[in-house]
Image (cartoon, rainbow, N blue to C red; front, side, top):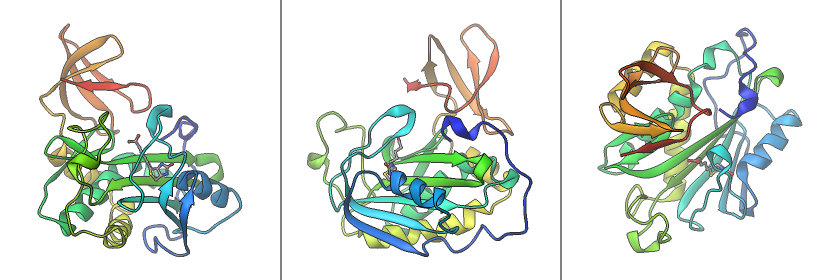
Length: 250
Ligand code: BTN
């Protein structure tokens, strides 16, 4: 989640949060960023489940201040409002890629893994990125997903060709939206145990050499609080927190 998620969660209420993503649905042909609009709507009191989609973004936002580029009409660009956000959602950043993995696998004969904290990979290439922007104090989060749906290798920009992939030919953005939202309903309400078990099964980094800041080591799983455990070259075991580190994978 973005930095403003760090201030702690309010206690859980009885309000229902684990069902109903997709209503209301605001679709734009072109927008600056679906996350930007969803945040504005959340600030203005839009209900849980509200979804913003677009065919094209002019200022798509990625994690750690990066931008997100997607081919018009060929990627799912979706932002959904979760509210109330509370103590049950501590592993939300790990739960959402699991929903995206299951959605992709329901649409095409692919197998997805997750590069901690929440990049979705197919065969070592990124198929989806997730940007969660949370306001725990106000009790909401915006869950942003960019999923490449049906993009030819040659259509990716040179910068990401060989690093990016898409779900598969013949898959529509509309089908991808339905599949992803249905799995949000399942994974946003999942227990920590379920999320951790499934994330560990899909962990793309386990056993791989990684680098972060000025350090390097071998990824050694996910701690119960969702951090990445690494055995450093100096022989220590450290836990890395999402948002604090930019990882490179060797
Ligand atoms: C990343 O991997 O850096 C996260 C990318 C998230 C991109 C999606 S596209 C829909 C939503 N709107 C945005 O501006 N960003 C997210």
